[in-house]
Image (cartoon, rainbow, N blue to C red; front, side, top):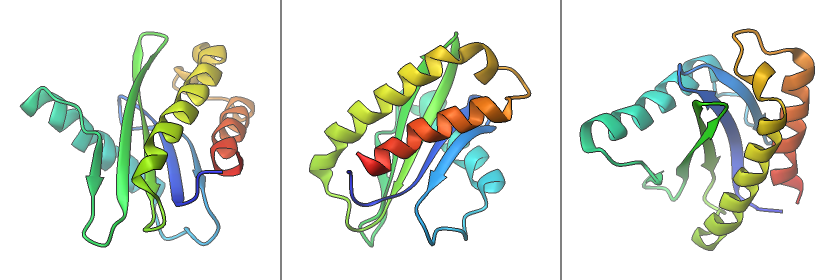
Length: 135
């Protein structure tokens, strides 16, 4: 298990959230508000600086970690929001776990990239993301 991850999002290039996972007690985040903003920050860094964001570090030690993948010809942004318990040495494991989620998304790319993602597909993706919190 990677300790210290509070929230994990999979976001389409449009800013629409495909799936998420939150640790218990993290209910104050409005997904519909935050995911387009996170996606916008990621796109801003690509467009203005021609560089990708690795992570944003907050003063209190929390981090917002970004990783982009191409699934079915569309860019998806994976975002992990950590708490102060997250250790920098866990980034490598988190990268590996994100790649596993990407592989899972490749299985469902036709339904994942459509405008209306089925609840069954969202559930499968959510289970894959949940494994990051369990493994």
